[in-house]
Length: 452
Image 1 (spheres, helix red, strand yellow):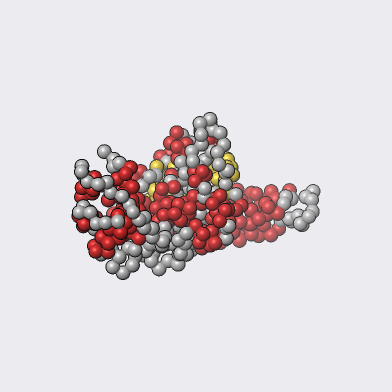
Image 2 (cartoon, rainbow, N blue to C red):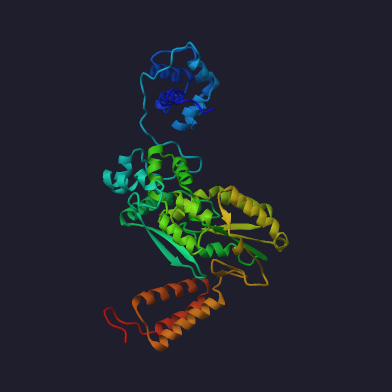
């Protein structure tokens, strides 16, 4: 049976008192905890010392306010406070501690994280006035929509539906200007300072698609897996846990979570279901607060939330004599020829670990690629060394020939082609030179001119 409201209130008042000075030297010693609890109650009842003894100093340091309150309320020693014939306990003084940064875990204690203990400090750091921050992080933004799909709170995202290359629709939830600036500040000034697992190659400074591919070049067997609904599969609760792990107080952690997560409107979910882009499970993930694909902070937060996934999959790969890396939702294993024979067992293990971590494998996108066939991951051929696929080179060369023969269009296409050529040159310098020679012969329209 859950504890009564009165019991929880007394437990919460005691939790406030116990944590009020717990950061001070000696603040978690038994006599100090007992003194603060006595002051909160206004006297020292007989049941109080056994409660403090049963609770222990470690719980006061480790648990947050909610967790400590529930721990106290569930103690058998706390039953004596509500025994028949005993005066009902009352909280005479509500002792509140100032918010503070908790210590980051081992390995992150030297990360240069900004100390943000209040909403005011967060707003100042983001360059937002208090009322603007309150508007962006309002809890109303994350309420479920009322029945009938009537609009609720103001939306801070544009929902964009983009066609996929192989058919279907992709949802991009792009933050509006003010929120995007705040998210960019969070990414550059905070998230980029937090290291991720070495297997994560996507959206990490100093790592790239090429590094992801290079790790598997020349392997006898390459196995590729794809995670379904990657960003929507990261719920707000996991994002909140990241902020708390980094040491931010509960109130600031909630605000940071609200800045980085959203719910997809019912009309957008209905359109995606109508197009067959999501199933019922996907609609539920979008209806809950999740990481939006399109926010600057989402890739970095997803990498942090995937730390344990990467840790477990890297351990699995080492056990099988293989290598493992991940680029966003793309999971790749490579290793000896025996992996091909045991691919079903490996797939089962990978699927089980992913499910345990809250993700689902996209079964139709699982590939086992031996070396006598083309081994392609994230658009890069890795049979011998990272290389551009031949068909992609041919398409790009044909596009340049068309522009050379029939004339160019505009500067936007010019920059797009320049980017594709630069990528090809990184993977294959010889082919890149040929493409650059063709590109240099194209006569592009001058700014302000109209193509003929």
